[in-house]
Image (cartoon, rainbow, N blue to C red):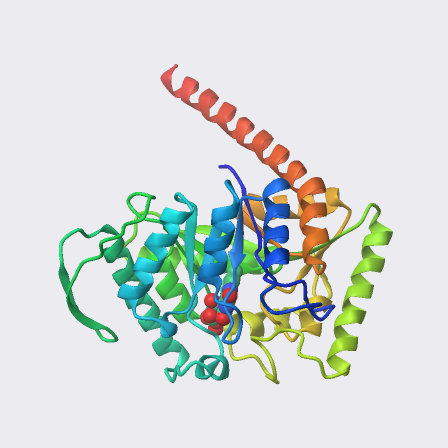
Length: 378
Ligand SMILES: Cc1cc2nc3c(=O)[nH]c(=O)nc-3n(C[C@H](O)[C@H](O)[C@H](O)COP(=O)(O)O)c2cc1C
């Protein structure tokens, strides 16, 4: 199976190691970063969502209208909109991008962050709402006759959209979360299930949980799996490890100065979402795992989302990513601490190695399959 690379569509140059240099929506930087991804071998970029952050949907429309190939992954929180409205936004965006949209449905892992935009449901209730919401959006994307909906969270009558996606039958649905309620909802509805990078063994456990949830929901297929990391690469192992230690030093220094390093996770002593709790527990149990996974970046941010690093030369990091590919992960998400420079370096030096090795593995598998078939047919 081919492998895909997801990068980040930030709207400014700030990261955990450095405050942003301009406004939250820096139009020129947004385009420069997205273009760097498109020109350096990436497939798609994530437009993330935070309560106070620039609205990712128009930002995605802007990028789609300026670039021809880069695909867009739009994060969307159900609590901020009605599903009929959102389905039309997505269909319009799929038209603008000529079929390059995937929607990442976010349930929200933190009550306080959800409360900032009026969401008062508990996390498990939120997952039930997300599930209903995704089903409605899928139906609107594919239904050409007016219909009624009577659900737990939404009720409406006589709705039909007049705008449909380019992608048929519909754009892909992406989903993230590591709690049992997340596996149940995403296992049932997602085309792509997103995980934050953990050691191989723990990732394999999560993949199994997602597959089991998909089977329990009566599906005959399973979601594709995406895993996210923070690569720290340099020309030699020694230089990469120096850079890794400098990175953690910069994160800690900012925290000690009381700076908010990530807006969404701002001001939380203990994260409420299972995914972040897992990252913290893994970091407490050890700094290094497998070939190149390094947890102090996750520990220093309090398990703030995608935060485990892969450290080493491009060759080492590529081999580490291939270990995940061999586990069944076919979408690799990566974001450096210098968003623009690292998108270029990773695209130049890591992506080609992974793609080449994946092509070799696939060719071997195909040849093996042909041999097996020839043996069967005598
Ligand atoms: C790849 C990925 C991207 C995510 N992007 C966002 C985002 O942009 N905004 C947000 O609020 N949550 C985001 N999340 C958080 C999840 O969607 C989800 O709300 C949270 O992890 C639920 O917590 P749980 O682990 O307890 O189920 C993302 C998660 C993943 C795995």
